[in-house]
Amino acid sequence: MRINRGGRVTRAEAEKLAPYLDTDAQTVLDANPALDDELVVEVSSPHRRLALRRLAQADGTEDTQRWAAAESVSTHAARTVSSRPASASTTSAQASWAAKVDIYLQHRLAELGESS
Image (cartoon, rainbow, N blue to C red; front, side):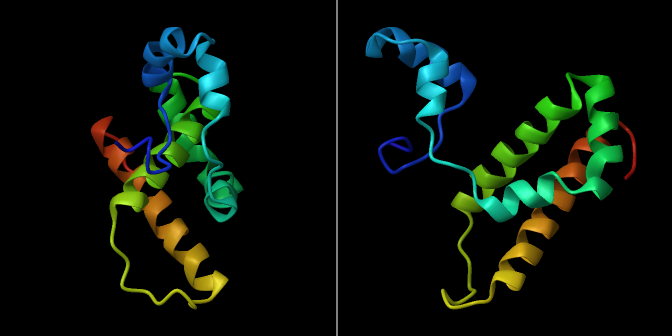
């Protein structure tokens, strides 16, 4: 249902779907809708590198943690109802992504027993 409404497919889902679509998992992942540009900028911001490195030490690389953060924040944001009018400024949208990324990183670091 989520995929029919334009939702993103996870790697695990892509691996399960690929045989039914007579293709490989990467092709399924490549068909995902693009992440919001402002979200990518926020997740890639240099001041978040330390948190991403801490997460990478526990699991994966800084790049995999960056993508995991973007995917998670994007998915969560898609499920969140906004009271902000559609005409709100880009600055407001960027601040919203920044706050969501910060909350995600704080939560993930807390799971590891670290603080940001």
